Length: 401
Image 1 (tube, rainbow, N blue to C red):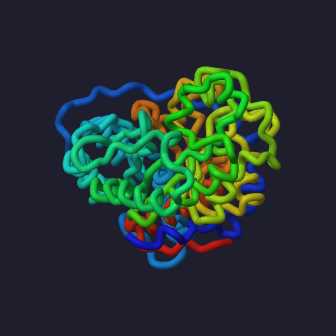
Image 2 (cartoon, rainbow, N blue to C red; image 1 turned 90 degrees about the horizontal axis):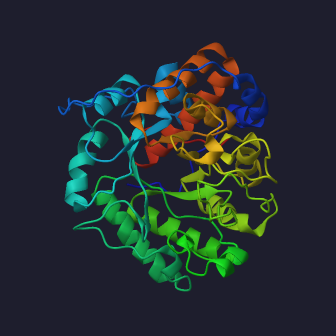
């Protein structure tokens, strides 16, 4: 697959919509929504179908998105979690809600061949397949054909050529397994004070270090390696969880109280955006000096920092919106995808299939009744189509605005 170094673009209309995100958020707060219900899960798995087109109309991906129905656009921007082969209930959900893809949250221990047995039918149905393959305990796919990736904190940071070659190999393994997008690498810069307080803490696995410049260099190298290996890359946890109490522990309600738009710790994300990373994943944590009112994933201010200040033109993804984390607890589950998209996000990750139906219906309903929401949704779907085009799932062209 080629073209990973070309960023998915923004339409001029989409950029304007993002700047109007605050007003859009205000218009949907308090929207009456019903939570999703658990579904029975039969063992039989019927053939997959999806409303997301496997080949979009030739031309702009934004134009292609405009030809989708509102329901198809809403499904396009959601990735549902899989812990194994999809059962009948999940398969029906994917088809009914026109979902754009899946994320393998595993762990999957069956090796490349075993994973390919699951992803092959998914990709054949036009679904984007993502996984989190960072290293250490943050490696979802293991077994024959997958190398054991060292924790980020123990990978070499002073040998770019070797590191790029390693990640090209690991990216190639993902591609062989039918994965299109690796939700890696982490751009978080560990706070020195946290490292001193917990010198062998949980940060060792996902974080590359405490020096923003070093981490920025590593991130661009890892992204280039993954793209060379044939998969798209996502720099994760923007604006960075390295200064959060517990290093981003989802169980804490305490916000990051140090990160500001000018912080050096944002350098890895700025460099990744300039280097052509395909996706940047936004944290669901709170960052008091960026937006004291909303978690980052629901913050137009945080999205604007990415789009306008960092000039990022790729896909903005979320962390898991089905999470029971403290920062998300104040937002009803059914409203979370809507809030994320309205704020300026493009691709919502939802690990729990039982929550997806209510989330997609809320987004579809809001777009049907509010033109501003509809415009933002179309823009998000166009951005996701741009990513799909990069990995061979669509034939449209991402156009920079």
